[in-house]
Image (cartoon, rainbow, N blue to C red; front, side):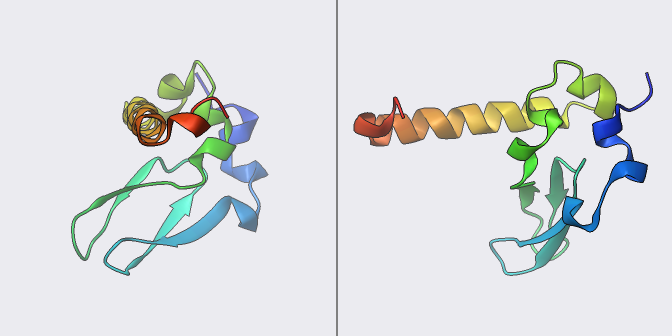
Length: 95
């Protein structure tokens, strides 16, 4: 399978590339199709904070498109974070 237009770099703009800091302060560059990056300074795994805004977050063929299981790992992590947030603040769980 070829990549869909949403993941084809020839259709990307500068806004599809962003820098975000690791907890240690090192800036990490995330491209639109990057699910995670390992910090070269501290070794921490950092997930792309913009991933929820791209098709990889909802497309049923995302694993096939990326060619790896990183997106499934991200989905499990975000589901666990939502469950923890709901348990910590039940009043906001339905919002």
